Image 1 (tube, one colour):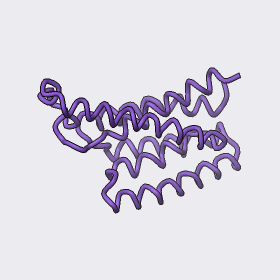
Image 2 (spheres, rainbow, N blue to C red):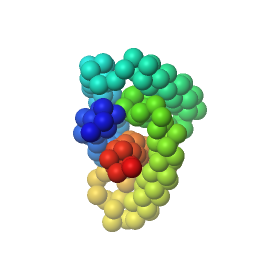
Image 3 (cartoon, helix red, strand yellow):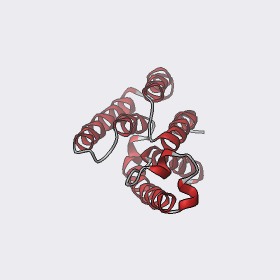
Image 4 (cartoon, helix red, strand yellow):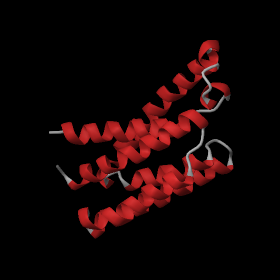
Length: 158
């Protein structure tokens, strides 16, 4: 098992916890972002070389800048803007483009799923904030699905 995969697998429970919170309440809590960041800072020096860590930090900073602009334009929530750079810390630097492509597809599926839930009266009464807030998408769910898909790719690639 590679260090990249090991680090990503360690992160999956954290990101899935934030996905559940985002789906149920449309909120990614700061504690979830902080735990993910702390996990990377503590574990990565033991698994990655300094060059890889610096590339991951650079990609996280760039994504944070983009997410900050999207948050300022009210296109994404604050939790999404904070969690996405943390997610990128766990993505191998040579797989960032693949991850972003997977994320785009996952975001499309999650958006369609949220639209379906919001338009189905029976599901709207389920009590989820996602079901009651029109035009709101739990982006954390797409982040979690993308991280899991990337982990599966890293396991199965030749």
